[in-house]
Image (cartoon, rainbow, N blue to C red; front, side, top):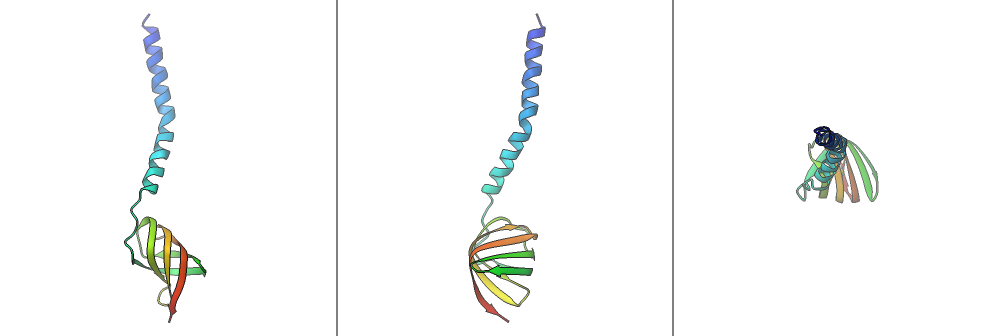
Length: 106
């Protein structure tokens, strides 16, 4: 009757393999939710900034930060400066800011 324990072991292994992608997805979500917030007052310079106050979207930025932002400044290569209360950065790809206001323009 060795077949029953072997069959149970095979079934358990198949279940573990089937659950692996779910565990990986949950771990990735936990990492993004627990990502450290950039230091307050951080300044990011971006190639392209589209502002529709009180929100902005910027592309091609000088940061590797990935995750939440708080109390930060975005400049558009010396043309305009914006301060935002909260936001999110996806590395150098893009930054999205909320609660933003324009500070100055050159």
